[in-house]
Length: 324
Image (cartoon, rainbow, N blue to C red; front, side, top):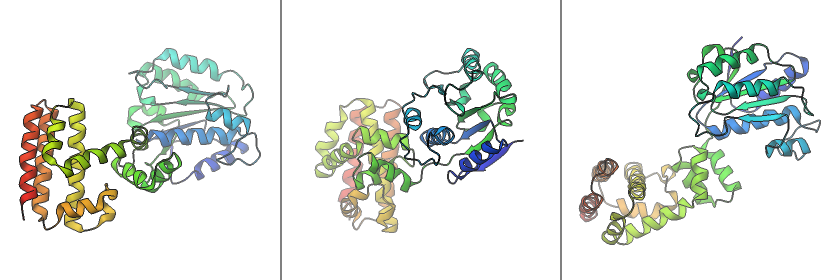
């Protein structure tokens, strides 16, 4: 029988473990949602919960089993679909999975198979997988991940317990980024800049985007003419990145002009400059500049001449700054 659970915590996995110990258990999970990092973490959590060498599992457990699961070195845990650049997962890979599943666990209590982005399974591969879902080998668990349940055949979905995985909250994203070395203002900016997409936020941290965006803003705010001239000859992808940053900045300017509430800002670290930027400016003027920047950005994305685009931007920017 199909069952769907809105995931608010790991409580569902605690219930799963209890059911496993009494023999009343689902043999497969379907994790749906756009936050891939959270789905991976949940898959690792249930795998460790089932196979932890300690009697009372804790999330920071350092037993040999949990360490090897974390480092992808456990012989009874297999990840499939890890090459996410592959357009499809074919029947041959499913057959490889089935051969592995039919073996007894080497040392674990439960063998766990985890398939990333199961929506890439071909129809033929899904039909082959169906047999393993209908008649799962003992001491085994299959975890499928996909963004939308509609990416899979209904016969697959109906044989899994679906768990809808929500995105990380801003608070969770900030905490994770701080744990990975981000300063407080950097973590806040990256969490808001990524709109809850942890992978994007982590990429921003790794690429030092917080510091890079502040360099760009400093250059433009100090001397827009020199700043825009220096960006006009850059590579197109870098030019588009600059325009996206300006759109984000002007989004903040519009919010501050309309609400005077700094807690809503993405660039919370630049509150004083934003306040100065919109000082005595009507909201309509800020919104007009925002619309102009978005329009110019669109033209650049459609291969408009970059130099002319920045000239248009410079004119619009100067008109805004000189307005009283």
